Image 1: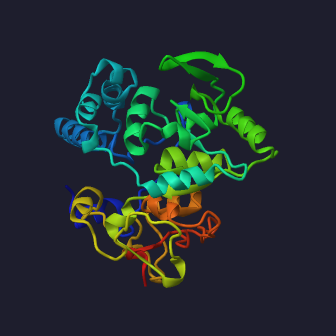
Image 2: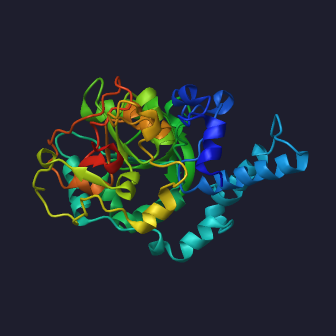
Image 3: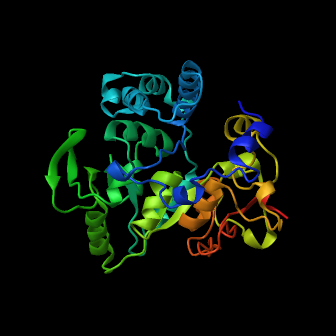
Length: 360
């Protein structure tokens, strides 16, 4: 691993990649327009390490850094070997078999508070939908453990294999789920049913019909800056609530005026500056520092977000929370401070408080 001096020698004192600004506006381009490949979740982070080792090996064999690398197709093939949806039914690859052996080792059931909150959300002509890029078999396994066997009671419609971010820009037809697999294409959606694939325009038609509003407001919860935040905001103009575990890993602190007494009991979360050692090991970087803040690039010391991911957070999300539990414990009509997307690195949208590195 490069030490700090080596990193500065390559990227300069501000540690900015030469394509930093351009990449912020091209977070998740798809198909032929895809210029950058971001590794930003537990599914693909291992491939980041593999790519780094491959570059080192090729450079060593060449005697100096190559001008061009052509190994991505092989890495991408390994993704298919492990994560392509058909591998779940075949019990093939390294990921699905181990998850299926003991899923409760990796999946945490939600609290009753979250379940009560989901039920309450369905009132007042609101529509609650579940959308995932996972296929129905894998998604079904996960959500049954998280919400229980009655999970369908918490949503008005269920969308699987959505293929985000392409869902927001393509014209793929929705398919009904028949006997647990995608069946016929449908021209319109019906409440209470499960679908595969689809597109943003047809989903909005369904929401307009159910809410009886010509342009219904959508609040979308997601945990991926690339596949959820960016496309939902840019292509759908949805307000995004980002579930961001880095807030807990780095510590955060709420202001007293930002905390209200929950109207229902939910599991208590530690609200202080304590950093969980296990999360620190997997999420934090001694070499690169905070996910949110880089001190060397803040001459004014105003504690705005100035890292790449920090800029993405404030630009494409309304608010960010460590877990859904915090939202579920609040009244539905509670008003939250939102990120100001027009202010670079704005920090107002963190709830229940700003991450530790952003505190004065």
